[in-house]
Length: 257
Length: 316
Ligand SMILES: Nc1ncnc2c1ncn2[C@@H]1O[C@H](COP(=O)(O)OP(=O)(O)OP(=O)(O)O)[C@@H](O)[C@H]1O
Ligand SMILES: [Mg+2]
Image (cartoon, rainbow over all chains, first blue to last red; front, top):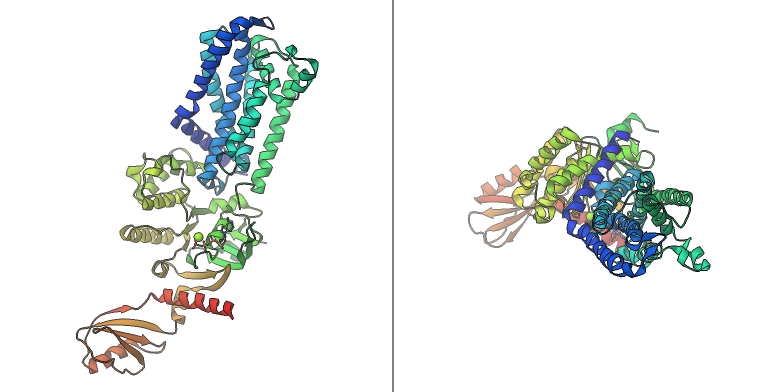
């Protein structure tokens, strides 16, 4: 493998992805900002006042890390799935497939694009959150590493979704039926310690719970689960999903006749 | 084993087969060999398998069996080296229509590892060559059909491939641009790029290409030097416009003649006859010819005959 070539090619894909996000910023950046502002106003401000505190924090403070994480996850996933499926649909994926870069480069380039969009939106949501509440960061390294890993996991998942998608409907099925429910049940809005034991255990099968809690731990210093588990789960997901992407690309599933 | 001879070959295809997942057998074991530096026409009726073969060479389609080597690099064991040698202009538009013309070509350069000043120079060079430099900031969607095709050519050339494959590059391109495209392709061929071209305009193949292969229903039915193919044609029909009306077709020695309309004479010439002889005989009869043309493009006739005879075979 020609490393120099692959580095240039990966950078090119990332640049292409950034150009795409900026070109359609009304679809990529504005909607999450609006949605999250509404969440902060309605759940944090209006309803949150009646809830009082959770785990010793203001309700607004408690949900802010979860909402930031939620926007990072959905935007990373959304970016990769629409960009890569769009390339399949418009057939310009062929531009990449005929070129002498490796499949890993194609995957990494798109994942990096997804991560950048996730971080950009995450940052924006954080800034919005600061209008509503005060956030201090308890463990900066945890915050950064958890955001990056989660964003990578969901970018990879979006890539796999795009590979299997045949029509535009297929790229919204997973976000609607899997991603959103798991996020809502992933402890963004409540601490699972409020649940009966049975449901606590069920919740622990949800990977998003670990990301949200690890991230909340990074910011507030409080978590429902062990941080070590969170890292282990995220790393396993990265490895498994990346291998899955590689396997599918090599077999040409969904991209070659 | 790669021999020196294989290295000379721009493309070597052996017993290539392709059966699509719906059971469609698009290629039934084709062999093709393209010399380095050649200008090669791949002809065939709709659905013959041209695009499928090109798809396999450029690794957009998985093959079912057989071997493909590009400048000695097998697409099985040295795919990336093989890909680096190829530039591809697809039959159907596969541009990101929302991307700017300049970005499309620049991105393609990046995918081949070109960056910085060199990439910039190449982008400008090929956008200028294809007369798209003024449109570099426009999105691809805003280009006309012919311009999109030119953009795909610029994109295919930006890494200066040794083998350029064009799948119907002149479909829907106006006459003037087509001529200038021909000129351009001739130039890059003379500069050393091997070119494979598919087209339904046989005049185009005849004027550009030095080698032709005809594929029909997934099998190669003709594969030879252009000059040999044309020489093989048994007969040729000319249409003469006459200065004056004739009442009956003149009987000429060695030529079949037939009147069509008042002032047009069809003359069929066998392989051993001489056109000079025709004019000598016409002169002797005081028949004046004001102009002369081929009834059909010669290659077109050959093509029709080959494809038809194959169909008759199939019907028997
Ligand atoms: N994706 C596909 N799935 C199934 N069959 C296909 C597919 N693509 C092409 N075919 C079939 O394979 C055969 C060869 O098609 P191909 O596109 O290679 O022809 P072609 O020679 O390029 O024709 P044209 O001159 O019309 O471009 C046809 O019978 C076609 O229907
Ligand atoms: Mg075709």
